[in-house]
Length: 77
Image 1 (cartoon, one colour):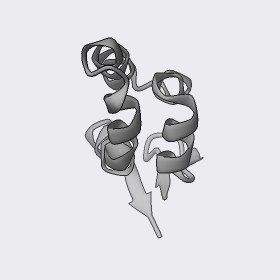
Image 2 (tube, rainbow, N blue to C red):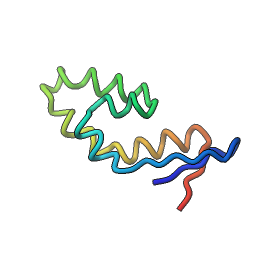
Image 3 (cartoon, helix red, strand yellow):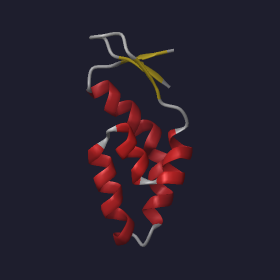
Image 4 (cartoon, helix red, strand yellow):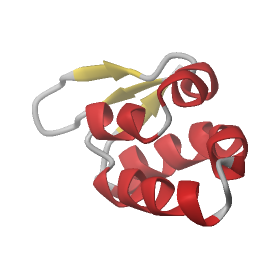
């Protein structure tokens, strides 16, 4: 996925969020600046005995798309 900031034309690539969030868990969201999901996934890890580390990545693509679109970025093909 690729997003463009309409204010300054900056483009951001979001490549393989499933893979990166599976490998790095909440640290992937920290690196991308998605602090709410980083905190939520970090809190869910001990509560679910680590199962959320496996399940959360399957929602990562949708979460990243929603994050950028809510900030006003445009998704480009």
